[in-house]
Image (cartoon, rainbow, N blue to C red; front, top):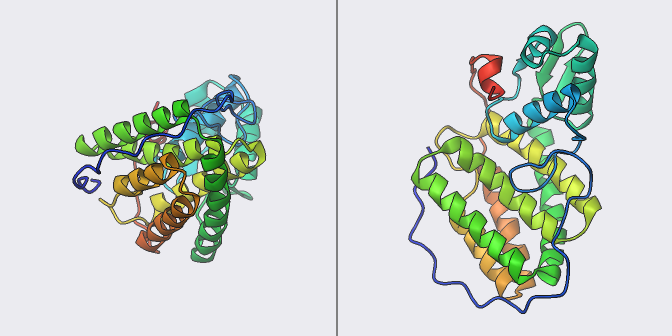
Length: 264
């Protein structure tokens, strides 16, 4: 269960004047994630795309744990797809570091090592620092309203003790901020980093821990609202360092069925 939220923060500072800029959109074609961002390899609505998106979303929602086997035969049956279609989807997932393809042993959800964990968080901190700076420069009133709605949804999920929804919303918060930077290239890299961090959290985060703290998200948004670039960057860096410190570099075995883990 995620930790109960602390006392709600003080009312936010007044938003900066809205800019004449279109709402942010995704950089690449594909199936939207709950936060409006896209999985890195998403394309459309074919069987291959549906397999890709189901695995990706299940990793993001921490239903599919690292090391989970993804048998071709089971995926063929679940998605009414041919083996070639399943293999193509798995290859795309492997390209995006979501799946590992093992010769003669089949595919599993990727298992990050402790060294990869350190490198991924290091890269993510630098990437999000750049995107937060851009977000402060480009944010509009409509963007701030969407971030506030996001924070409200997070808080509601925490009060319901809805861990899957909270995990999804926590990742979605960072993807929303990435969209506000209006840099499609950096945004695409962020989607990959967030998905890989979701794997790490699913593997190493102790049961019952919140993957992100709602109050920390709230503080970052307040800095963005008042145009405090350095404050927002500092808080984001501290937030990601806390997330990295919270992971415990050992995992527990899990054994739900593949159909349940894919949310089908």
